[in-house]
Amino acid sequence: MNKIRSFVKWLGGILLQPVIAAFLGLLVGAVFIVISNENPIEIYANMFQKSFFSPYYLTQTLTRATPIIICGIATAAAWRAGYINIGVEGQMITGAFAATIVAIYVDLPGAILLPLSAVVGMAAGGLYASVVAVLNLKFNSSIVICTLMMNYVANYVASYLVSYPFKDESGDGLSLMTRTIPESVHFIRFSSSNTLNFGIVVAVVIVALFYFMGKKTVFGYESKMTGLNPDFARYGGIFERRVMLKTLALSGAIAGIAGICEIFGYKYRYTDNMFTSASYAWTGLMAALIADLHPVGVLFSSVFLAGLQVGGQAIQRSSTIPLQMATVIQSSITLFVSAKLGIKFLKSNRLKKKRREQGGGSL
Image (tube, rainbow, N blue to C red; front, side):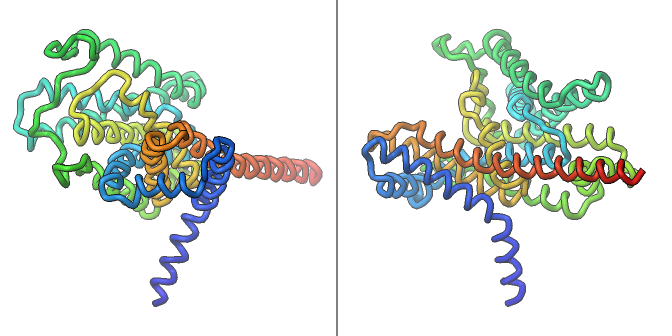
């Protein structure tokens, strides 16, 4: 009984911030729904019915949540260590495209080709993120700006490659996409009547592994300490440069897995702008912020945000409320969480300033 109480208390502590933020975001959405002359209770009931409480729509929500969960973990991996990686989308594109090309052009049995493609995709995403670490270490360039700009580099390079050398010429010529990957490397689908596939299992395993890494491994401890207090980490003998390289490479590799799950589990080919238009990485960033970078919180926040998007599409078809209402709610939730982070940052700066003043006075 005590174990159950401890578990409920632990889970409640993780989910408290996401629940409060979601409630406030829904309140903001309700204001706009009322302005649109609709009943917010009916709209929300319809939205959640067609995202969580209908078997078909629930599978759609979980399918959409899969890359969002993994992108959220990729974000959390870097941000918890103090490295603000805004380039998850570019790393996702790089990893997914590399894995897709290997799957299409390497002639091997599926049992070998699938893990080979996954390893290549993870390596590509990890190496792409590592470029930013090298730029920072060599030239002291901003991690935030470099990762953000490299999103565009990855997207435009992939766009060129899928438009010319790797374009599927068997179609009408208007669609910019690769050939489909072999059926032997498709992820298992749990039912022929929906899109839910083995990718959701991969996402849950990544959440569990990341939680274990943070709690039970030396690298997890070093990464966390570097983010919480870099000075203390250096004093404790943690080699910050090595931690940066490993952390950003890990973040990029996880982002690559997100793209692999979307293509090998659902789309079966790379299409131009497929990740940019879907905004998986940015939704994953929202989920990570809402969950305060906790992996279990990222899991639940990602599913909730995916449900908003799926439900938003449903209510657009049955009411005057546009799909963008889901974006308004998501943005409001993130805004409330960001306000909390901003207050926390200001308090931390004020405390540091006070300590410096006290140190100067003692001299």
